[in-house]
Length: 358
Ligand SMILES: Nc1ncnc2c1ncn2[C@@H]1O[C@H](COP(=O)(O)OP(=O)(O)O)[C@@H](O)[C@H]1O
Ligand SMILES: [Mg+2]
Image (cartoon, rainbow, N blue to C red; front, side, top):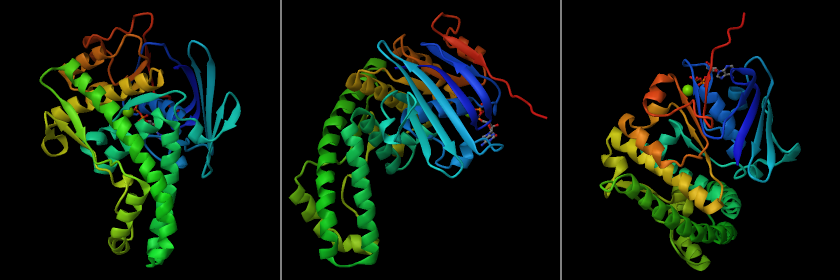
């Protein structure tokens, strides 16, 4: 699924803005603050159902307006698709597919994207929860069942945690443990499968890039049955009461990325983080492509801030020629010097200028 064009109304600084994309590499360039990242943000919302920068509607709605709309037109070999997003100040998001209202959880996966942005760099640099989110998002894209189970699990978890604050009786908590174990066991089963798939792809991606570099990861998903899960919850119940939260389950999974066997978070240099980040993102792209048969569109915010300058060209070469990519950068010459030819028929560049209003 490729994005063909998009219309923004009162989305951040874009009052009434049209953009048409090419199926290859699209470079959006211009000075800081002209709204390049905002364009990627809008595309991302059409893919994932939420922004990568904020959950607050007032931040993305233009400050002269009370509502915004984003309209995206997509196509593949068989279909045309229109995904629209509308939001009024303080209200819920409204999504439509081909003009028909749709809940946001049915948006994810129609038009997959892989995002390389400062926010996403938390995947290697941030907390364990940032890595968990990376994997949860990826697996949700691969499997709608995973996504739905994750939502259910999180809602049961929230109820259980609330109850831990109100009651110290195990009998009161037990019904929640039974429910939590049902989804917990299943999430772990799925995670074990998807972890393996991602791990194999990460391995082949780092081999393809450079024989001397291996990126891998460790995690602690476990294979167990519901009874075992409930028993461990029972054992950790006293601790849960003290901490007022649930200390056991997939929501506590710790993922660590390793570069040549060493924990990246602990030992990684800036350059190693960038390299690992590129390879992880490329593996994410490959995993989505392999498992869903859809080629994700790559969103690359501030290209050379994200990728190691001398190695970025190599990373881009890993992408196949027919991958739709939207790159933002302050400069076009820089991009051309790195071997990206925006004059090819399948590529395109856009110069974005600030519209000054009196
Ligand atoms: N809700 C909003 N209303 C109006 N302008 C906004 C809003 N949110 C952000 N902006 C402005 O829009 C511009 C968008 O910036 P951004 O997309 O990050 O630009 P770039 O990536 O080109 O540097 C900034 O100048 C910012 O001040
Ligand atoms: Mg930007």
